Every structure is written in structure tokens, then in C-alpha cells.
Image 1: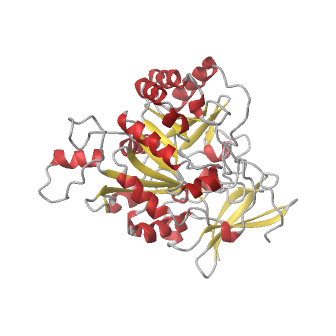
Image 2 (image 1 turned 90 degrees about the vertical axis):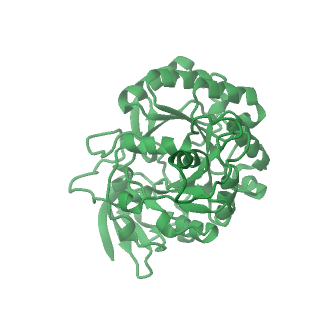
Length: 441
């Protein structure tokens, strides 16, 4: 049954195409499209673990005549519906890993852009995006010795918050470098962290990395840099490790502020078509977390800024027994839309560290925050301390590839990437043709 019409692209030639979302009797939802040259395609976008219409009820369909040229030559045009929450800037193509999955296809030996080129890009981002959260990415951004200077310059140029997207290797092996990043004004480390077993890292990253990543978290905790764990979730590799990962994140608070799940997408280094059985959808992720971590499904809410099919968020207090108490205000979140600025402040509150408390208090970065019991008698200052040092945010971003790209989602993207003077939605920047072995329809 057809649910709604939208637009997409041919996964082979990236030609803009009409598309539709259709639901089968078992509740699964597919995106379907046909290219005049390369034939018809369909891809699973929803497993039916949650009600699709209820989850996506905030999403307005494309208006007639809209999205006809997306994402070719994409920038932030008049059809785009939201501003910039986070602006991503690649500062290097080099990397000290060769991961099986990498959206940026990092690892190139090419020379880094100069410091002045990067400063010019930062000025453009700050000028166009209105005090964004800027994310330095790559490749592996910590391979740049001058990254602290870029962080300091971004703060001076007007970027409200600064984050790095990193595998954590240099942070763990070079604490002095990490201290320089902190002194320059780094707010958040977006740490590649795929699970609690070295076998997972061996499969996805090519080497055992768990203890090294824990060292990176410890060092960031000592420096009061907020850490968000970022697992790439791949079916059959780490999708059964989600509960243990969340449990570990709780044990590492307050250094760890959240877990940001990214179901694997097929672009960059891995531009292969995935069979329906291998596609890992947003609702499957929520169902797996619900089952493994015993978190109520009602805790998960769609973004109030981006398209609801792009991700979810949920906030919790860590209980004395290590469990999670939901804090999400369902009534508020279900009936309001927020802009990029509000979303940026929500992200910052969730992922940055709070003000330094006195030694030995819940804010002491040398040890996890004590899990204070929740009670109606808790005073407001104690509650705020718990929120700063004993809370955990779970969120997700389901990136789009050439098979499942939905222009309706693209129009509400607030995660933007900078490329040679152009600000564009993340999924448009990294879109690449998919190697389709056979036509699905």
C-alpha cells in the first residue's frame, strides 16, 4: 500500500527520480523508484517494529514541484527547511586506520589543506551558519599537529561549540596533545566506539582497540572534555552488543555523556548494495536497544529539528543500580518543532561537561559520579548536579545512501558539511553511486 510520494535518486547514476514509500502487510516500509536507464529498485527503510505513521507524523510531504533537482549541485537553497545545527569541516584526508566502513573514505596520503585555508573555511562557516557547533573531521583530524590552533580560531571566529570526530588513538597515546586541545577550547569528543569486545573492532576497524579507547575516555575525563561514544551498528557484527555498550557508557559517566548510534549506510568506502536482510533500520535499532537494555520504547522520540526518519533521542538519569530512568518529556517533544539553534543548545547541554564541582563531589572528573538516589525531596541544586554528572543521552543518526535517499528527509537536515565554499546537507555531500549487483525489482 502506498503511504506517500517523494523523490529519490537512481543508485547507479544518481539521477533525480520520483519515488514512493509503500507499506507491506507485515508492517515493513520500502522506498521504491524506477530509473529509465537502470531499472527499478526498492529498499527497506522500516522494519515495522514501531508504527511508521505515528513515528513520522510530524513530517510534511514534499510539496508539488519541490525537490526536482536535489541533490545535484546541492547547497542550502530556498527549499531547505532548517538552518545549521552542526557544521562539519574535513581538515585532513589522512588516517591512522583503514576501517571497513568509512563515510569519508579516509586514508589518503594527500597533503593536508594549509592552516590559512582551514581558517578561511572556518570564517565562511561561522559567517554562513550563525554560531554553529563546528565538527572537525577527516580522515583523522588529530593527525594535524595544528588542530589546537584551529579549535582556538573557531572559537574566536564565532563558532559556539567545537567538536572533533576521532578514533581516539592519538588522544590515548599522546596526553599532552589532548591537553593542548582542551586548553584551546575543545568541548566534545565524538569518539568512534563500536562495542565492548575487541572482536568487534577487529572486524570493523582491523585491529583490537577497546583498551586504547578506554584510555582516551579516561584522559578526556581528566581534562573535562565531554565524550560521546559513536558506534557504527552493523547487522551480525555488533547489533547484539548494544545493551552492554550502554551499560559500559553508564559506568564511564560523567566522562561519557552519551551514545550516538549510527546504523551502517552504504557510501564512502563501502558503496555496496545491501540485501533486505542486511539493512539495519532505525526502528530495528530502537527495538534492539529496548530488548537488550530494558529501556521503554516510549523513551525514544524523533528529532524535533531534523526529519523524524533521520534519528531519535532520549535522555536518562543513571540510577544507583546502573539502570536508566527516562527523563524525556513526551508531551512536549511530540507537539513542538525546534529550529537549528534550539537543537544545537540541546546537543551542547547533552554532550558537554558541566561546570567544575568541588573536589570529591559528583563533578570530580577523577571518578564516576556517585549515583544519588532520586526522590521527591531532592533539592534543585542536587538535581542539576545529577543532570550534569549523572545523566546519559542516547541518540541516533541514520544516514542516507543512494539506495534509500529520500529528498523529503534531505530538506530537513540540520547536519551540514562544508566543501569549497558550499554548505550542504551531510548526506548530499557524501552521496556516492552504489555498486548494484542485480536489480531488486
